[in-house]
Length: 224
Image (tube, rainbow, N blue to C red; front, side, top):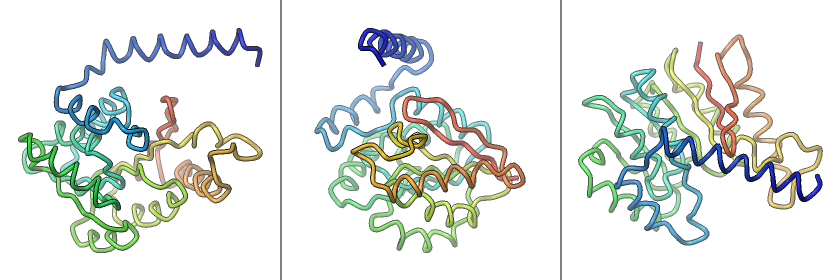
């Protein structure tokens, strides 16, 4: 793509994004604080505010009272969802890294809605089976290691109620999902896993689903 066309396309995307954020996705102070605390390059992978608002909408649409989130980071998306949950709602958010789990816990304790969130620290492949007894769940949000998306889906399919939602973030896989060969930052195994994830959720016999054209792609599937 010529540089001029690329610059125009990027500028148009940024203008659209800014309009959406200004009109629909104002960032609450609680989320602003989390974003500021997670300012290091390796931590700047929170969902954007427009995706956080979308998650809130999805939580309200299905009346989600029991949610599992795979991938906590600093608790940014957890708090977005908690703010939309009804009284008595509970989020179980799985985080592998102890450092990030402690940061998220610190944030949750500052806000009343944080009481709805329980951090499950450890390898999700080990902690998810233990959460099964608390299901079935209304919404399962997957935003963790991309190479494991298909395996996380195995668990989600067994533990989601009928009419509940499976939501996967970054399902464009950094624009590699439609490429014949993966881009430099994407491993071949991650590409295969993400394609399998999207393929399975596109099955009209099992799901009403769509891959939303967000910045990094978000797949939303309702279990039929």
